[in-house]
Image 1 (cartoon, one colour):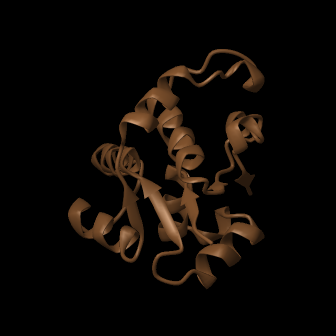
Image 2 (cartoon, helix red, strand yellow):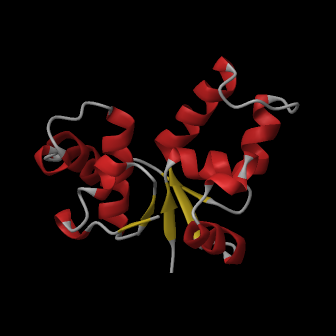
Length: 136
């Protein structure tokens, strides 16, 4: 089974595994090539975090991204994901949510029918919406 990692999950898997839940840590450690995926927007988010210093590293941003995503499939935006992200109803998560990256990540998980590995409570509140499964 494949899993989609939220941005913080791939960051923490690379920088501080102790921040991952025991369940997510086991999934990441036991993953074989092809078991883990990220949305393409996650690459942009990670690059912004590297540029701002939010992700501290001695590596160049390119080296860090290469290491963090080695063996992880990057799923591109499709017409279906774009529409799903734009029309996603966040009222179940407590109100409007305008973060386009979160919308894109949830839409990618739904479109590819992948469980989403995230600590984000707003994303957890969407569990079941269009078949979304969230694990932490």
